Image (cartoon, rainbow, N blue to C red; front, top):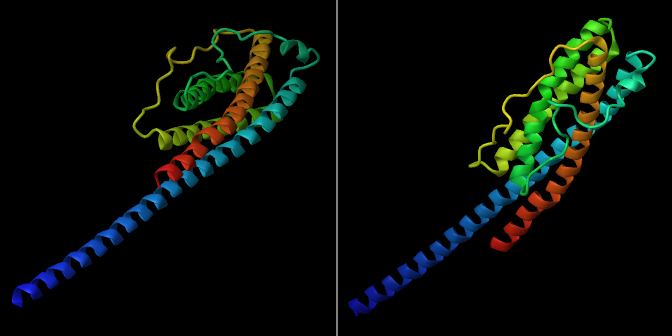
Length: 225
C-alpha cells in the first residue's frame, strides 16, 4: 500500500511538473513574440521617422536651389546648366545588392556631402551679404542632412548589429582646388542639384526598404511564432 501511495504521489508530482513546464514554455514563446513584435514596430517607426525627415529635406532642397539661383545674379541659369558630375562630387545613385549594402551606401553618400556643403557655405559667405536668406537655407539643409545621416546609421545598426558600417571606398572626400567667382557659383549650384537628386533617390529607396525589410520581419515572426 505504501508503495502504491508513493507511486501516486510521484505521478502527481510529474503531472504538476509537466504542467509547470508547459506554462513556462508558453510564457517563453509569448515573451519572444512580444520582443519580435516590438522590434518589427521599431523598424517601421524608425523608418517612418527617417522618411518624414527625407521628404522635408526634399522640399527644402528644391527651395534652396531656387534661392541659390535668385542670389547669383542675372546669368544664374548658366551656372546650373553643367551636365554630368564633376570630379570630387558624390554620385547621387545608391549602390549595393542587398539592404545592408544599400543602407550603407546612403550613409556614405550623406557623409560625403557634408564637406561640400561646408565649402559652398564658406564661398557664399564671401559672395553674399550676412543677412542673405541663402546662407540660412544652406545651413538648415546641411544640418538636416547630418541628422538624416545619424538616423540612417541608427537604422542600419538596429537591423545589422553585428555588421559595422563600411568606410568610404575612396577615402576622405576630395574638395575642389581654389576657384574664381564664376567657378564657385557653378560649383555651388552643381552641389545643390546633385544633392537634391540624392535625396530623391534616398526617399525612393527608403520606401522600398520599408516594404522589404520591415514587412519581411513581420512575415518571419508569423512563420516562426
